[in-house]
Image (cartoon, rainbow, N blue to C red; front, top):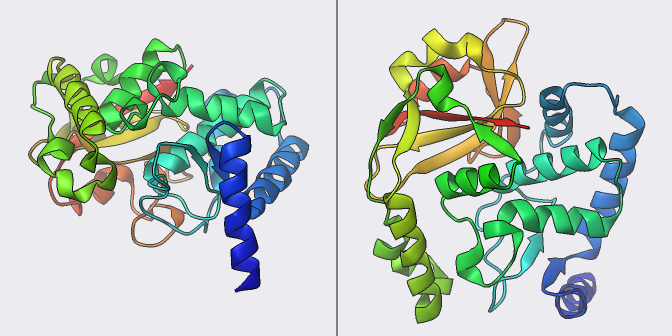
Length: 280
């Protein structure tokens, strides 16, 4: 109990002293240990997609944890290596991979990179500035020059869909009790809905599987009303020659799908296909 009290105290003080950054002493320690180990084992000439897989595999077994970013009374840059959801897993893998590529190992660079990929135009400016919808996460990080949505290049088709799940399920999101946050999310939804989404239908994925590479960021599209994407992970081509999914599974932990992606998707209710993104 005493340890938990001290840990909580650290979190609160750190969020004030470090410009809205929330990070426990344990998570800071995990970051330092992880980046040090990664640097020792990293091969600089490795293709960047393989670097993403290399980093992603170091998270295998990390427990799945939902809503890890919904902390406190205002939006903060939350850092949590002890529990990951599908999006925070992808974000951390991407950030650490970029750090290796750019020969960086300090905590300040990590927080700068994390803020860049997690928030609109790379700037934390309240709850609505976070890229909540993963299709917007993709578009915004493409605009930043971090990745490219290659779905259209490998057989994807465009569809239009009204995105409004958060605003129509306001009760599920504590931060949306605030009218400013709510209006900000509504504006994001309007912006997303005005653009078409290019996705690869699930019955065509096998045909284009050879066009995918290890390290591609895969987003799972859905037929759920008002929602764009339900899950994300990193493509990994295994020895069987098939693309599998390295991801933070809601069933328990970071893992590599036993089944190839094509067969894995068949078991997911409401899945319509995927969006494929290549990190530049």
